[in-house]
Image (cartoon, rainbow, N blue to C red):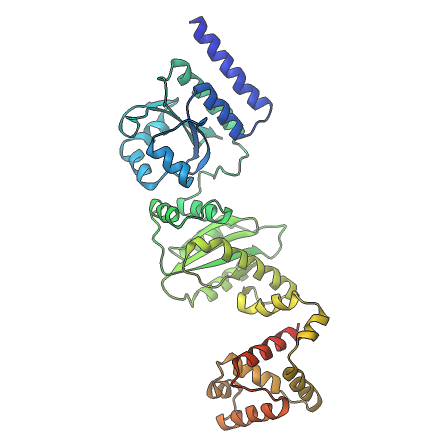
Length: 405
């Protein structure tokens, strides 16, 4: 008995030292692995790996190997935890659970929950790859979880208990910790989220950053009601709403505009995309749209890429660079417009914007089709541009947008 008490005391002292020296979670788990002389894994309650330490041992266990390969427990193994009652036993137990049945029959393991502020925040697993666990091993697990509770308290990898599985997927995609399409599909199955055809990132930010989003809980519940099937998560700038739909959501702009006015928000919308693994790139696009819209001081509360695209390109160039790169045909036409109070530059812009259709351009400018055709002939005479040359038209359009900024 004395030897048992002495060993337990020494192990507690070493774990306490980790706490007093403010060691990282990784260092605490390494110390635990040394004490057990066994592999140790720590995951979030959503089964994302926080840290694993095998001390260089070979662990011939499917749960361990999947987690080591992908950074997650697979949906198949999570289903096993549920159907075999393992999750229930760990959550309801006041201490460590010794698992030597079902999924733990080949390699027994000690499992226990880690509590933070009265909520389950993480799970720890110790795999028996060598000698059977001792009574001291079981007893020290309680103390280890107490140490981890304090160590993990401010760890950003611990997601709040209210976070849903789809939100956790978004969080992992945005952080760059989820980059495999195969793993993503498995996570989506676990979250019971069946993606539709298209996605769009909607970055929602407060008009006055210092105040944040008023009534954010109500606002988020309203978004869930307006856009069923979509997912949202908090980001440093505000809220990221990921629309998920089968066809272009034409009604989205109206509803978002109403919400923006009601809650004093600005809304930045990415281009549609089909692969959720690209979420991080389209979130970055929203950030660029937001920054450009701020520079332009746009009155409209909603900004899309088309609204700021040429402004972003223009802002990359100095004034003298813009002048040097400006197309000669555009210069000529602009000079004529300025001298004669005509609007030929805008006419050609409109023609390009309407797919080089004489009829559509005429309808947009409220002129007859023949009048439009004559204007295009006159533009050719004045500046020499070939309106059938796509490259020339692209340079004209870019020059026009660039020189206006």
